[in-house]
Length: 425
Image 1 (spheres, rainbow, N blue to C red):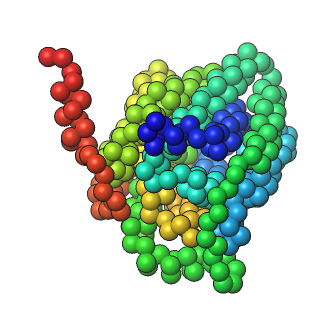
Image 2: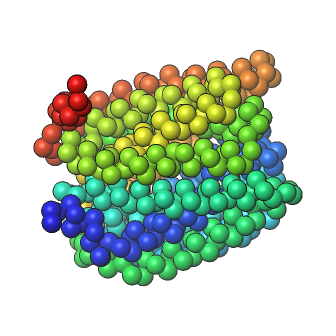
Protein backbone atom coordinates (compact mmCIF):
# COMPACT_ATOMS: atom_id res chain seq x y z
CA UNK A 1 0.00 0.00 0.00
CA UNK A 2 1.51 3.33 -1.03
CA UNK A 3 1.80 6.38 1.19
CA UNK A 4 -1.12 8.19 -0.41
CA UNK A 5 -3.46 5.25 0.20
CA UNK A 6 -2.26 4.90 3.76
CA UNK A 7 -2.83 8.58 4.44
CA UNK A 8 -6.25 8.97 2.85
CA UNK A 9 -7.53 5.82 4.62
CA UNK A 10 -5.80 6.51 7.93
CA UNK A 11 -8.32 5.78 10.73
CA UNK A 12 -7.03 8.77 12.70
CA UNK A 13 -8.40 11.00 9.91
CA UNK A 14 -11.91 9.51 9.97
CA UNK A 15 -13.23 12.10 12.46
CA UNK A 16 -12.06 14.82 10.06
CA UNK A 17 -14.06 13.26 7.25
CA UNK A 18 -17.11 12.75 9.47
CA UNK A 19 -16.96 16.33 10.70
CA UNK A 20 -16.60 17.61 7.13
CA UNK A 21 -19.66 15.70 5.89
CA UNK A 22 -21.98 16.54 8.79
CA UNK A 23 -20.90 20.18 8.99
CA UNK A 24 -21.25 20.68 5.25
CA UNK A 25 -24.70 19.03 5.29
CA UNK A 26 -25.87 21.61 7.81
CA UNK A 27 -24.24 24.47 5.92
CA UNK A 28 -25.54 23.23 2.58
CA UNK A 29 -29.09 23.23 3.87
CA UNK A 30 -29.06 26.99 4.34
CA UNK A 31 -26.01 28.82 2.96
CA UNK A 32 -26.84 28.61 -0.81
CA UNK A 33 -30.17 30.30 -0.13
CA UNK A 34 -29.19 33.10 2.27
CA UNK A 35 -28.47 35.73 -0.39
CA UNK A 36 -31.71 34.90 -2.23
CA UNK A 37 -33.48 35.07 1.14
CA UNK A 38 -32.07 38.58 1.64
CA UNK A 39 -33.37 39.69 -1.77
CA UNK A 40 -36.80 38.21 -0.96
CA UNK A 41 -36.76 40.25 2.26
CA UNK A 42 -36.39 43.39 0.13
CA UNK A 43 -32.62 43.93 -0.11
CA UNK A 44 -31.39 46.48 -2.70
CA UNK A 45 -28.10 46.24 -4.59
CA UNK A 46 -26.36 48.31 -1.91
CA UNK A 47 -27.98 46.16 0.81
CA UNK A 48 -26.62 43.09 -0.96
CA UNK A 49 -23.23 44.80 -1.06
CA UNK A 50 -23.39 45.06 2.72
CA UNK A 51 -24.69 41.49 3.03
CA UNK A 52 -21.84 40.04 0.98
CA UNK A 53 -19.31 42.35 2.64
CA UNK A 54 -20.37 41.43 6.16
CA UNK A 55 -20.47 37.70 5.42
CA UNK A 56 -16.90 37.90 4.13
CA UNK A 57 -15.38 40.30 6.67
CA UNK A 58 -17.12 39.20 9.88
CA UNK A 59 -15.61 35.69 9.96
CA UNK A 60 -12.16 37.25 9.54
CA UNK A 61 -12.30 39.91 12.26
CA UNK A 62 -11.38 37.65 15.18
CA UNK A 63 -9.31 35.05 13.36
CA UNK A 64 -5.96 36.63 14.26
CA UNK A 65 -6.47 36.29 18.03
CA UNK A 66 -8.07 32.84 17.74
CA UNK A 67 -5.32 31.60 15.43
CA UNK A 68 -2.55 32.99 17.62
CA UNK A 69 -4.12 31.63 20.81
CA UNK A 70 -4.40 28.21 19.16
CA UNK A 71 -0.70 28.32 18.23
CA UNK A 72 0.30 29.29 21.75
CA UNK A 73 -1.83 26.61 23.40
CA UNK A 74 -0.73 23.96 20.92
CA UNK A 75 -4.38 22.89 20.59
CA UNK A 76 -7.01 23.09 17.84
CA UNK A 77 -9.91 20.89 19.00
CA UNK A 78 -11.32 23.16 21.78
CA UNK A 79 -11.66 26.04 19.33
CA UNK A 80 -13.40 23.87 16.75
CA UNK A 81 -15.81 22.54 19.37
CA UNK A 82 -16.85 25.89 20.83
CA UNK A 83 -16.84 27.75 17.50
CA UNK A 84 -18.99 25.09 15.86
CA UNK A 85 -21.57 25.09 18.66
CA UNK A 86 -21.82 28.89 18.61
CA UNK A 87 -22.35 28.90 14.84
CA UNK A 88 -25.02 26.21 15.08
CA UNK A 89 -27.15 27.79 17.81
CA UNK A 90 -26.97 31.30 16.35
CA UNK A 91 -29.08 30.05 13.43
CA UNK A 92 -32.00 30.19 15.87
CA UNK A 93 -32.45 34.01 15.90
CA UNK A 94 -31.90 34.09 12.11
CA UNK A 95 -35.10 32.04 11.73
CA UNK A 96 -37.14 34.96 13.08
CA UNK A 97 -35.74 37.93 11.12
CA UNK A 98 -38.22 40.04 9.14
CA UNK A 99 -35.92 42.32 7.12
CA UNK A 100 -32.67 42.15 5.17
CA UNK A 101 -30.97 44.47 7.66
CA UNK A 102 -31.84 42.19 10.59
CA UNK A 103 -30.48 39.24 8.62
CA UNK A 104 -27.20 41.09 7.98
CA UNK A 105 -26.78 41.90 11.69
CA UNK A 106 -27.35 38.34 12.91
CA UNK A 107 -25.13 36.80 10.23
CA UNK A 108 -22.38 39.22 11.30
CA UNK A 109 -22.73 38.24 14.96
CA UNK A 110 -22.71 34.53 14.07
CA UNK A 111 -19.66 34.93 11.85
CA UNK A 112 -17.63 36.88 14.42
CA UNK A 113 -18.32 34.55 17.35
CA UNK A 114 -17.98 31.35 15.33
CA UNK A 115 -14.79 32.41 13.56
CA UNK A 116 -12.55 30.60 16.04
CA UNK A 117 -13.21 27.39 14.09
CA UNK A 118 -11.91 28.68 10.75
CA UNK A 119 -8.12 29.09 11.17
CA UNK A 120 -7.94 26.22 13.65
CA UNK A 121 -9.59 23.82 11.16
CA UNK A 122 -7.03 24.65 8.46
CA UNK A 123 -4.22 24.39 11.00
CA UNK A 124 -5.49 21.02 12.27
CA UNK A 125 -5.51 19.61 8.73
CA UNK A 126 -1.94 20.78 8.20
CA UNK A 127 -0.89 19.30 11.56
CA UNK A 128 -2.25 15.85 10.70
CA UNK A 129 -1.41 15.51 6.99
CA UNK A 130 2.16 15.09 5.69
CA UNK A 131 3.41 17.18 2.75
CA UNK A 132 3.70 14.25 0.33
CA UNK A 133 -0.05 13.53 0.41
CA UNK A 134 -1.42 16.94 1.38
CA UNK A 135 -3.02 17.53 -2.02
CA UNK A 136 -4.65 14.10 -2.13
CA UNK A 137 -6.11 14.31 1.38
CA UNK A 138 -7.20 17.93 0.91
CA UNK A 139 -8.99 16.85 -2.27
CA UNK A 140 -10.60 13.93 -0.47
CA UNK A 141 -11.84 16.16 2.35
CA UNK A 142 -13.18 18.67 -0.18
CA UNK A 143 -14.95 15.84 -2.01
CA UNK A 144 -16.72 14.60 1.10
CA UNK A 145 -17.57 18.17 2.05
CA UNK A 146 -19.18 18.57 -1.38
CA UNK A 147 -21.11 15.32 -0.89
CA UNK A 148 -22.66 16.57 2.34
CA UNK A 149 -23.43 20.02 0.98
CA UNK A 150 -24.89 18.70 -2.28
CA UNK A 151 -27.32 16.35 -0.56
CA UNK A 152 -28.53 19.00 1.87
CA UNK A 153 -28.96 21.68 -0.79
CA UNK A 154 -31.00 19.38 -3.02
CA UNK A 155 -33.18 18.33 -0.07
CA UNK A 156 -33.73 21.93 1.06
CA UNK A 157 -34.47 23.14 -2.46
CA UNK A 158 -37.09 20.43 -2.93
CA UNK A 159 -38.71 21.13 0.44
CA UNK A 160 -38.89 24.87 -0.22
CA UNK A 161 -40.23 24.31 -3.74
CA UNK A 162 -43.07 22.13 -2.47
CA UNK A 163 -43.93 24.26 0.59
CA UNK A 164 -45.86 27.50 0.53
CA UNK A 165 -45.81 30.49 2.80
CA UNK A 166 -43.48 33.37 3.62
CA UNK A 167 -39.70 33.19 3.07
CA UNK A 168 -39.30 32.57 6.83
CA UNK A 169 -41.77 29.68 6.76
CA UNK A 170 -40.25 27.84 3.82
CA UNK A 171 -36.75 28.16 5.31
CA UNK A 172 -37.76 26.89 8.77
CA UNK A 173 -36.88 23.22 8.16
CA UNK A 174 -33.51 24.02 6.47
CA UNK A 175 -32.60 26.19 9.47
CA UNK A 176 -33.46 23.31 11.83
CA UNK A 177 -31.20 21.00 9.80
CA UNK A 178 -28.37 23.53 10.05
CA UNK A 179 -28.74 23.79 13.83
CA UNK A 180 -28.73 20.03 14.46
CA UNK A 181 -25.91 19.21 12.02
CA UNK A 182 -23.77 22.08 13.29
CA UNK A 183 -24.04 20.82 16.86
CA UNK A 184 -23.36 17.19 15.92
CA UNK A 185 -20.34 18.07 13.76
CA UNK A 186 -18.86 20.02 16.67
CA UNK A 187 -19.20 17.03 19.01
CA UNK A 188 -17.54 14.74 16.45
CA UNK A 189 -14.35 16.76 16.79
CA UNK A 190 -13.90 15.19 20.25
CA UNK A 191 -12.70 12.05 18.45
CA UNK A 192 -9.81 13.78 16.67
CA UNK A 193 -6.42 12.82 18.07
CA UNK A 194 -4.27 15.91 17.82
CA UNK A 195 -0.59 15.55 17.11
CA UNK A 196 1.81 17.59 19.26
CA UNK A 197 3.13 20.67 17.50
CA UNK A 198 5.46 23.43 18.65
CA UNK A 199 4.00 25.96 21.03
CA UNK A 200 4.78 29.58 20.33
CA UNK A 201 6.32 31.32 23.32
CA UNK A 202 6.23 34.92 24.43
CA UNK A 203 3.40 37.23 25.30
CA UNK A 204 -0.06 36.98 23.80
CA UNK A 205 -0.26 40.07 21.63
CA UNK A 206 -3.09 39.27 19.25
CA UNK A 207 -1.69 41.80 16.81
CA UNK A 208 -2.01 42.02 13.06
CA UNK A 209 1.19 44.09 13.11
CA UNK A 210 3.06 41.25 14.83
CA UNK A 211 2.07 38.76 12.15
CA UNK A 212 2.89 41.31 9.44
CA UNK A 213 6.40 41.67 10.86
CA UNK A 214 6.91 37.91 10.82
CA UNK A 215 5.79 37.81 7.18
CA UNK A 216 9.07 39.43 6.14
CA UNK A 217 10.72 36.07 6.67
CA UNK A 218 8.13 34.21 4.52
CA UNK A 219 8.18 35.89 1.08
CA UNK A 220 6.18 33.09 -0.59
CA UNK A 221 3.31 33.69 1.81
CA UNK A 222 3.54 37.48 1.43
CA UNK A 223 3.37 37.27 -2.35
CA UNK A 224 0.43 34.87 -2.16
CA UNK A 225 -1.47 37.31 0.08
CA UNK A 226 -0.82 40.15 -2.37
CA UNK A 227 -2.06 38.35 -5.49
CA UNK A 228 -5.06 36.98 -3.56
CA UNK A 229 -6.02 40.52 -2.58
CA UNK A 230 -5.79 41.80 -6.16
CA UNK A 231 -7.85 38.97 -7.59
CA UNK A 232 -10.24 38.87 -4.64
CA UNK A 233 -11.24 42.53 -4.99
CA UNK A 234 -12.42 42.19 -8.57
CA UNK A 235 -13.95 38.78 -7.93
CA UNK A 236 -16.09 40.15 -5.08
CA UNK A 237 -17.32 43.19 -7.04
CA UNK A 238 -19.88 40.98 -8.79
CA UNK A 239 -21.02 38.97 -5.76
CA UNK A 240 -23.87 41.29 -4.62
CA UNK A 241 -25.47 40.99 -8.06
CA UNK A 242 -25.77 37.23 -8.50
CA UNK A 243 -28.87 36.84 -6.34
CA UNK A 244 -30.45 39.99 -7.79
CA UNK A 245 -30.00 38.53 -11.27
CA UNK A 246 -31.52 35.21 -10.18
CA UNK A 247 -34.56 36.76 -8.48
CA UNK A 248 -35.32 39.96 -10.42
CA UNK A 249 -33.95 39.22 -13.92
CA UNK A 250 -34.31 35.45 -14.34
CA UNK A 251 -37.12 34.81 -11.84
CA UNK A 252 -35.45 31.66 -10.50
CA UNK A 253 -37.24 29.44 -7.99
CA UNK A 254 -35.59 28.06 -4.84
CA UNK A 255 -35.40 24.65 -6.53
CA UNK A 256 -33.51 26.16 -9.48
CA UNK A 257 -31.18 27.95 -7.05
CA UNK A 258 -30.60 24.59 -5.35
CA UNK A 259 -29.91 22.88 -8.69
CA UNK A 260 -27.18 25.43 -9.45
CA UNK A 261 -25.35 24.37 -6.29
CA UNK A 262 -26.09 20.68 -6.83
CA UNK A 263 -24.71 20.68 -10.39
CA UNK A 264 -21.53 22.38 -9.27
CA UNK A 265 -21.21 20.06 -6.27
CA UNK A 266 -21.66 16.91 -8.35
CA UNK A 267 -18.92 17.99 -10.76
CA UNK A 268 -16.64 18.82 -7.82
CA UNK A 269 -17.15 15.32 -6.42
CA UNK A 270 -16.40 13.71 -9.79
CA UNK A 271 -13.19 15.67 -10.40
CA UNK A 272 -11.85 15.96 -6.85
CA UNK A 273 -9.78 12.72 -6.85
CA UNK A 274 -8.06 13.72 -10.10
CA UNK A 275 -7.48 17.20 -8.71
CA UNK A 276 -5.74 15.82 -5.63
CA UNK A 277 -3.43 13.56 -7.62
CA UNK A 278 -2.57 16.29 -10.12
CA UNK A 279 -1.84 18.89 -7.44
CA UNK A 280 0.63 16.52 -5.78
CA UNK A 281 2.29 15.67 -9.11
CA UNK A 282 2.66 19.04 -10.83
CA UNK A 283 2.41 21.48 -7.92
CA UNK A 284 -0.05 24.25 -7.20
CA UNK A 285 0.91 27.29 -9.29
CA UNK A 286 -0.21 26.19 -12.77
CA UNK A 287 -3.62 25.11 -11.53
CA UNK A 288 -4.08 28.33 -9.57
CA UNK A 289 -3.44 30.40 -12.70
CA UNK A 290 -5.73 28.32 -14.91
CA UNK A 291 -8.63 28.14 -12.47
CA UNK A 292 -8.47 31.83 -11.62
CA UNK A 293 -8.53 32.70 -15.31
CA UNK A 294 -11.51 30.39 -15.75
CA UNK A 295 -13.47 32.34 -13.13
CA UNK A 296 -13.59 35.26 -15.59
CA UNK A 297 -16.49 33.37 -17.21
CA UNK A 298 -18.77 33.69 -14.19
CA UNK A 299 -19.70 37.42 -14.32
CA UNK A 300 -19.85 37.30 -18.12
CA UNK A 301 -22.41 34.47 -18.05
CA UNK A 302 -24.51 36.26 -15.43
CA UNK A 303 -24.33 39.50 -17.42
CA UNK A 304 -25.67 38.15 -20.69
CA UNK A 305 -27.50 34.90 -19.95
CA UNK A 306 -31.03 34.82 -21.41
CA UNK A 307 -32.22 31.94 -19.21
CA UNK A 308 -31.44 30.11 -15.98
CA UNK A 309 -30.50 27.00 -17.99
CA UNK A 310 -27.39 28.78 -19.27
CA UNK A 311 -26.26 29.09 -15.66
CA UNK A 312 -26.61 25.32 -15.29
CA UNK A 313 -23.95 25.01 -18.01
CA UNK A 314 -21.81 27.62 -16.26
CA UNK A 315 -21.97 25.77 -12.96
CA UNK A 316 -20.88 22.57 -14.67
CA UNK A 317 -17.70 24.34 -15.75
CA UNK A 318 -17.46 26.05 -12.36
CA UNK A 319 -17.49 22.64 -10.68
CA UNK A 320 -14.31 21.65 -12.53
CA UNK A 321 -12.64 24.96 -11.66
CA UNK A 322 -13.67 24.60 -8.02
CA UNK A 323 -12.36 21.04 -7.74
CA UNK A 324 -8.90 21.96 -9.00
CA UNK A 325 -8.77 25.53 -7.69
CA UNK A 326 -9.79 24.88 -4.09
CA UNK A 327 -7.45 21.91 -3.79
CA UNK A 328 -4.50 23.85 -5.20
CA UNK A 329 -5.32 26.90 -3.07
CA UNK A 330 -5.53 24.96 0.21
CA UNK A 331 -2.39 22.94 -0.54
CA UNK A 332 -0.36 26.02 -1.48
CA UNK A 333 -1.53 27.93 1.58
CA UNK A 334 -0.48 25.05 3.82
CA UNK A 335 2.87 24.82 2.01
CA UNK A 336 3.85 28.45 2.60
CA UNK A 337 2.74 28.91 6.23
CA UNK A 338 5.39 28.14 8.88
CA UNK A 339 4.39 25.26 11.14
CA UNK A 340 4.77 27.09 14.44
CA UNK A 341 2.62 30.04 13.26
CA UNK A 342 0.15 28.13 11.11
CA UNK A 343 -2.97 29.23 13.00
CA UNK A 344 -2.09 32.92 13.15
CA UNK A 345 -0.82 33.07 9.56
CA UNK A 346 -3.96 31.37 8.30
CA UNK A 347 -6.01 33.89 10.25
CA UNK A 348 -3.98 36.78 8.81
CA UNK A 349 -4.58 35.53 5.26
CA UNK A 350 -8.31 35.18 5.92
CA UNK A 351 -8.43 38.66 7.46
CA UNK A 352 -6.70 40.38 4.54
CA UNK A 353 -8.87 38.62 1.96
CA UNK A 354 -11.97 39.26 4.10
CA UNK A 355 -11.26 43.00 4.15
CA UNK A 356 -10.70 42.89 0.39
CA UNK A 357 -14.01 41.13 -0.20
CA UNK A 358 -15.71 43.63 2.12
CA UNK A 359 -14.52 46.58 0.05
CA UNK A 360 -15.14 44.85 -3.29
CA UNK A 361 -18.72 43.90 -2.43
CA UNK A 362 -19.54 47.43 -1.26
CA UNK A 363 -18.06 48.90 -4.44
CA UNK A 364 -20.10 46.50 -6.57
CA UNK A 365 -23.33 47.11 -4.64
CA UNK A 366 -23.15 50.91 -4.55
CA UNK A 367 -21.90 51.17 -8.14
CA UNK A 368 -24.90 49.11 -9.25
CA UNK A 369 -27.32 51.29 -7.29
CA UNK A 370 -25.77 54.43 -8.80
CA UNK A 371 -25.96 53.10 -12.36
CA UNK A 372 -29.47 51.72 -11.84
CA UNK A 373 -30.90 55.25 -11.61
CA UNK A 374 -29.20 56.17 -14.90
CA UNK A 375 -29.47 53.14 -17.22
CA UNK A 376 -31.89 50.73 -15.53
CA UNK A 377 -31.35 47.48 -13.63
CA UNK A 378 -30.28 45.20 -16.51
CA UNK A 379 -27.66 47.46 -18.07
CA UNK A 380 -26.44 48.60 -14.65
CA UNK A 381 -25.59 45.12 -13.47
CA UNK A 382 -24.16 44.21 -16.88
CA UNK A 383 -21.66 47.07 -16.61
CA UNK A 384 -20.59 45.98 -13.13
CA UNK A 385 -20.29 42.36 -14.28
CA UNK A 386 -17.97 43.39 -17.13
CA UNK A 387 -15.83 45.46 -14.75
CA UNK A 388 -15.52 42.40 -12.52
CA UNK A 389 -14.61 40.14 -15.44
CA UNK A 390 -11.85 42.42 -16.73
CA UNK A 391 -10.45 42.83 -13.22
CA UNK A 392 -10.56 39.07 -12.63
CA UNK A 393 -8.52 38.50 -15.78
CA UNK A 394 -5.87 41.01 -14.64
CA UNK A 395 -5.85 39.50 -11.15
CA UNK A 396 -5.49 35.97 -12.48
CA UNK A 397 -2.32 36.96 -14.35
CA UNK A 398 -0.72 38.15 -11.10
CA UNK A 399 -0.58 34.51 -9.94
CA UNK A 400 2.26 34.06 -12.44
CA UNK A 401 4.47 35.89 -9.92
CA UNK A 402 4.07 33.36 -7.09
CA UNK A 403 6.73 30.67 -6.62
CA UNK A 404 6.54 27.02 -5.59
CA UNK A 405 8.43 26.29 -2.34
CA UNK A 406 9.00 22.65 -3.39
CA UNK A 407 9.81 20.68 -6.52
CA UNK A 408 7.33 18.20 -7.97
CA UNK A 409 7.82 15.03 -10.04
CA UNK A 410 5.96 16.23 -13.13
CA UNK A 411 4.62 19.26 -15.00
CA UNK A 412 1.25 20.15 -16.46
CA UNK A 413 2.63 19.87 -20.00
CA UNK A 414 4.00 16.41 -19.34
CA UNK A 415 0.73 15.24 -17.80
CA UNK A 416 -1.26 16.55 -20.76
CA UNK A 417 1.07 14.79 -23.21
CA UNK A 418 0.63 11.52 -21.35
CA UNK A 419 -3.17 11.91 -21.53
CA UNK A 420 -3.02 12.66 -25.25
CA UNK A 421 -0.89 9.58 -25.89
CA UNK A 422 -3.47 7.37 -24.18
CA UNK A 423 -6.26 8.60 -26.46
CA UNK A 424 -6.78 6.08 -29.31
CA UNK A 425 -6.13 7.57 -32.74
